[in-house]
Length: 448
Image (tube, rainbow, N blue to C red):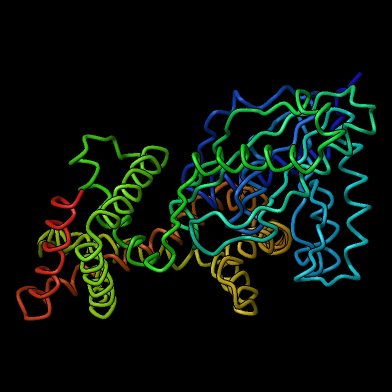
């Protein structure tokens, strides 16, 4: 009989703190889709997901749960960042998975400890999260699946003499943008797969059962996520997806306001592009060439692609500039300690060649070190040398100042791009970008 998991009070408090940072400060909006598909707390469950954004992927799933403490099996090199990071990750349920291609053959024996812990947790009615790609991808696509999660599940079942019913729950993570803060995040769950019907066959044909279940899980995850398989043309497809999504959605009469809707539009758009490539490869090749050319043109011009469709006006931007000037003193005040939060997190990212680590460092370093040290220190100093009321006010306003610091910079960056577009309006480069933009839009309407 599975027992209900006892969650320590300190863990609940710490998790509430992290959830606030994650759902309010780090992300603009978070979505938990099909959460009703998650088996009950005492049901042995292995959640299997795509992996694209390092620590942010398991954190997104962690904050979906309120009354359980799941275990997450993730890449071992995260635990080697620092001894404190190692203790922190283990405290929130993360366990290391050692990989042949990264940690070496000698380290593989360490996986037994991890697997023994997770198998016992499963048999006690716990939840375990695994990433069969064995490492995160740097694009919106699904990599090769290791079958270790299936082996672990059946070994746990065998340990109970195949009396415990274990479920595998496919899921996916999806982001509006991987980089920076105040983006949108979504975790979407599929349909649970019971392993009980496979127990008997597994005992005689384990490889056959492993292949069957892996195919079922992978197919579900593919159906949930945005999987761009044409990697040779990935950049062009991704550029079209980001900048012509709304036009495609309008043409197909699909809602496209929120991230879950945008995911469905993106999946349909990419599928139509793949189909068009089969039917008319030359036209699609030309379309992708134009998309890459436009991407370089707008980058060189320091503008946003959307300005080619909806051109800015001098009056609106002068008013926005006046608002920016009025808010400047507030922004200066907001730089303490938000400037350090950004720079310290980014400094760790610069040490990694993989940009997908950015979110991990921005969240983890700030949550564990920068925010506690700077905010508690400022609270104490303000209380001693000013007043404790002022110190309390600083803590209460801190989240608002963090958001102000971020949005002020973002707002002024867009304002700069708007003025750049106004100055470039009607020159040769602008006309060329406008013509390329319209060519792509017309080609999409024709081909799709």
